[in-house]
Length: 446
Image (cartoon, rainbow, N blue to C red; front, side, top):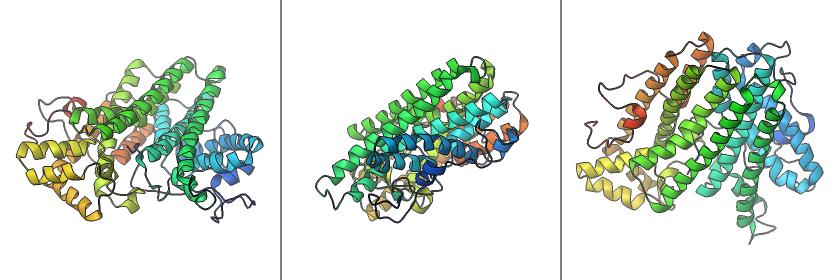
């Protein structure tokens, strides 16, 4: 049940704690960003309100991810200082790990969507910029919560090419508490995710309390979107683990989980936050939300393909995790439905005996890849991705947006979906979000 994270790249260490050059520090010889920012902060080209030093939001335009990271680093520095004052062991084992996870790795997709939505709707005043960057930092902490908990629920060994947080803590205490190290790592991951969520809520609460600094009417809208985002994230993840536990691998539940976990949480809601902060009209908000829903579904379908077919060196996580976990993905549901409709007993047998087996060998995983490919499911899913991407672009074109930010949104959509062109909707077909749940075995899509 891997919460969707941008694949195709990975960077630094979410799990490993920084070596603080103290007697109580782990002997891993590294020094993570949390250690540095916790002591000094990071301001770079950005002032305290998040704007460039000249007060020009175009400075942020040039490096949205860097601006969000700088704001996040400064905000985390204050929380790390409080954590160290509270207890140095807590700060070293949990707080610094959470900060390192949030600061290292990832492409800041959600904050970038939020930012370019704001800019596409004409936003750029100082209060809007500050709110957007702080809300973007909150989204990064919410994603940290999701990924840390997700890795624990999946028993994932790595994240972004390094030990997952629960594994890192267990390895840290393997010698001093060998009988309890694994359990300690699991408990630490629960608490670390909770801490990330608490920090995310702190940032949003601070914005809402300082309502006078928000654009008129934005506070209520931001509160409502944030509430929805958190609920949808949890609901989507629960549907994932429930599907794994019960072995339900049909199309409708797979699409529902993808919609909640990726389409809404990862793409649509960040775009909506941008429209709220910009004070956009209801029509513009609807169009951007529809675009986000389509792009977000494509995002999840691409992630399903990458999990099975893309090199782990590229994704930063082990290949075939969805198969070993028995995850109810759309790709696997389509493969099974097509195999059943075609009477492909060989493919059905491979899928039925392989899904949900944590000990599945690499050779057996190759047989799953061959079986899935033989059903035609990968090509069908790639076609769905292209059409969903095209639909997202058409929704963007339905409203009058600022030209350069709108172009940035189109580029972002291509980045998250991996689709490079807009493929027209099949004549007379269902809307794509609905058509996804139509059985691919009987609709003539071969």
